[in-house]
Length: 253
Image: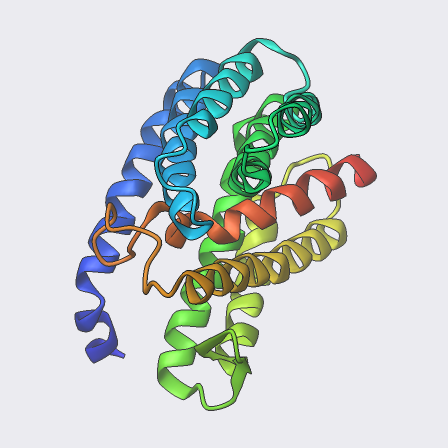
């Protein structure tokens, strides 16, 4: 275990820096800071996704993403803006035959997920972001260390290094940590179920990003985060988890 930690020192240091920044944002707990925090990662993710989708130098994607994100700060239900933007882009594609229809893809992934993250905060407050953080971080950390220690069974052809043992270990750790940070108004049983389902969804968020990287023939989505790669490499689990968590919370509460 000590050897694994030593080999992962850069990864751990980067994670601690990100955690510290999140603590600061959480301390001040204002919509503007949360919006700015997510906005930075959203733009970095958009940049990485354009490379994964083969849409480099297509600056219209950045323009629409920025417009939607600014509007999301003022609009009470940010997710509805996605459908408006898709209608606009579909209209442009239909009007200009030369427009690449793939420009829709970065708006679906990752922009939609960041809008769900923002909606989680606006509807349920900072505590729900901490809950999501410990679910996904628990699933990711547990999968990494359990997989490194005892992982033998391949989980998916999409990600050869991911093991079934690691995935199970990660989901179990998320199930232990998640309910400790759940919203006070829901029962432990509901918190446990939500934590486990979100943890599983985060695994497939990671798997989906691995699929995109394999299709694009790249090792990492970027290089901005030492030890992790790109922003998508670090946030992929949250991008799927946020959507599932918001849906489940709306059912339970």
